[in-house]
Length: 450
Image (cartoon, rainbow, N blue to C red; front, side, top):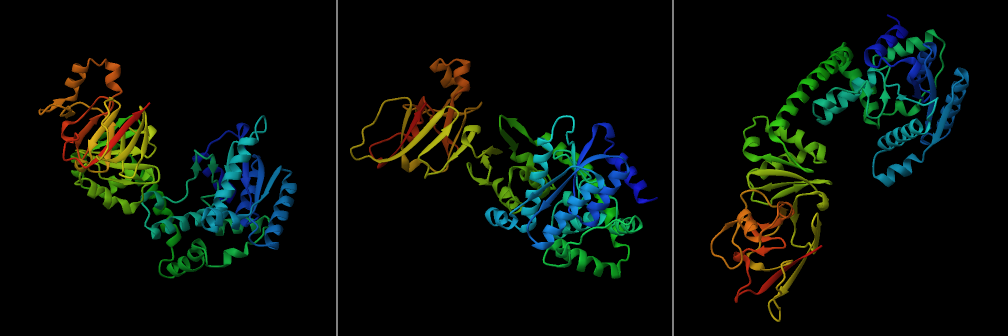
């Protein structure tokens, strides 16, 4: 089958968008892949505009590429968008590689164009010219980095979330080159593709040719594996979702996971990773999570956005933003914590010249009995404490009845605990075990401010 025939077949299998309702933004660098992609779309009657990024990385060559693509837009009589970027400065500012910087700048700009270009000529999808060889290199790169199964599936044909399609992902470089020569299509060469300082170029120019000497059909084999991995990933994702349904209890913006159920899973490393990865944890923290399973109450690990807290027989995934969480860890150095019911303010005092206060919104506690971190959380069924002045424990639900709290008032009650012991029913009563006595030397004062 010819390249145009394969192109249409691939389109129908993976996209099947109506031509009448589809206008594309083609990402065109001027290289052979994007130029051939443009020609295929033009010959099949697709409506499109062209976008070209000038990353200012190759001096005169970058200007040459931009001029070439502008001339290409005139040839096909299509609207063109061009944009220059200070890529090196952006990479330095963000502390990322040049390749990552170019990728971010490119896709952010494409998305801006698509959103801004509205009305009757609205741009519905962004089309890039990734090909089968790019897919092989991507899959191999992820494999060598030690990625999970998703990395082995290569590049997506259709990224629905970002509205990106890759319509020549089926085509090899050999097929693309043959089409360009047969149809007298010109293109520009990117000299940076010849250097091996970038990982992808090293794989393309060095490693894959070496492997090919021993395994001549290596490209077809990897492509076939990519397709198998895509099917395997579907089965894998389904299985993971079944585990999550059995393990997860959602409470507001928190996820509660029973420790005993988690410990019984044989594929523990995999399940833990699939649980924590979407909360910005990294693979090295899998072992830390496993240690949490047998750790003391209020032990935790943290990512940039979330914490996993051990609380009795549960692991609880909570946002770092305390206003959103129902389980909040308080370190010794904290002076105030903002939560849903107000602000807790913490002060340390020596008992010398300290005057006790008699207000329900203030807890005054013997600091020597308190272990940090403290856990501030919503009250729950089965909680108990020793109300100030009592030597026997009392369930908090019974305490609420004695206090004549309404159902609405009960729902708003929080408790503060230290190493699994409730030291204050916030705003109501401290625990007798933490009261100030004659031998107390240091007082922890906590005030609830509405």
